[in-house]
Picture (cartoon, rainbow, N blue to C red):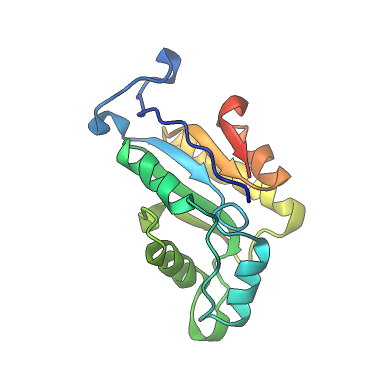
Length: 172
């Protein structure tokens, strides 16, 4: 079983000064970016199972919520960046609704404004990398800083390394 790794360092508003303890109020605009499927859940198949049966509760990777809560407690915003499609509407629900409900039910720190789903039916296959890269570029254009990133796929790493130091990217 793969465990998610945590670097317990409070955020700092100036990435050139290196990691330092800081008051959470200094952390505006500083975030950890994470994929959801097979990063916070145990497999991509969990989402597919939930699409087929919205009552299915995707299995959480051990300690994933604990990890994201530790980051949130240190003052980081958590940005959930998924290739799930915003327009998917399984059995009377929505992909956004299922995603938010799952994060909440499993105790993840959630700001719905920072749960980002792909337009349409989703960013499938190799399209996930450019979609996630463009999304992160929009965040950085708005002044966001991403000291850490978590993903499971090459497309996650391809996108995340455009805004996160590769030494602080975690492939699970």
